[in-house]
Image (cartoon, rainbow, N blue to C red; front, side, top):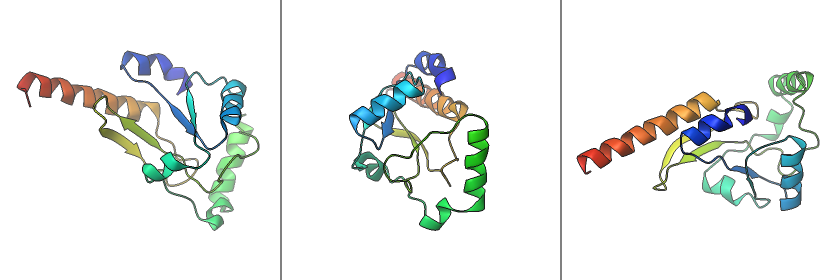
Length: 139
């Protein structure tokens, strides 16, 4: 996402992250990982519930598949450090257009299942096409 920041801006979008930590913990995360996007602190997980983001089972945390993906990420230097918040909460991606409509939602199968920037940018382009088409037809 970080490497595609200019593409998101060109698409006329704003990327906003949501974290389960306190405001101070979210700020530390942004600084530590040089994240160029703002982050909403949601330690009560209200937005996670609002967008129906799933939680992983307790057994899922210890599955060989999850452990392997975690070790592979750490080997690439992508370790995130000590978890903050609910370690069972899965991430997600929700794209909301300027009219408040959800135009893209990614519900991951596990913690390492992320929507890639290409899929998100495609959804933004499709939403923009629908909006301009509606404006032209007056619907």
